[in-house]
Image 1 (cartoon, rainbow, N blue to C red):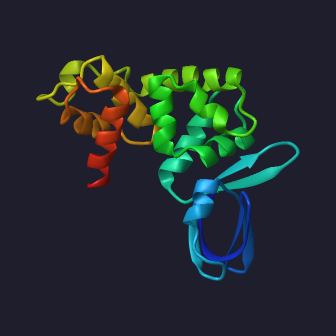
Image 2 (image 1 turned 90 degrees about the vertical axis):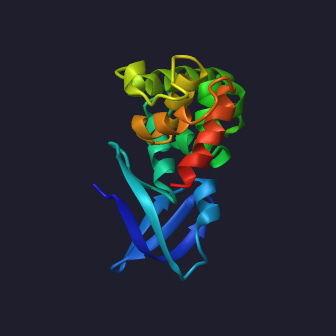
Length: 199
């Protein structure tokens, strides 16, 4: 419904930002990572948004970067993860770190988030891997870039992890295809992100 809000930042507190657009103040739930990226009060700010409508509440969630919004949406698809837990995860981990943790099976990284215990952290890793795998399940090796061809090992896992960040599978495969596929998944993702950042 609301893709983004842009206007004067009139209020800021932990996990909340209010942006005034056309005389209306939009209260957005935000991550600590987004809070750190916001400008000073009284200046113009823009957030990518998602509206959550429930029987007892309507909340607007705002993110400084589109890939953080996409990662938030991915986290919400995990069983047992609601908006509060997803915001907590993205307050502790960047989207890049979420992708790395999911790809490498590092469930302990998610337990750094407030309210996320070991069982939920393991479920996040398990389901994020599955959901990322769905993004590339229809792609065969022949359709991916040649050179350092992306197979079904570390390179394929890195492509899946990049999908969590909102990159298209063609973008992710092209970046990973330029790298040495014998590197670890974490290193492949890290190096691919550097390449993608230079676009």
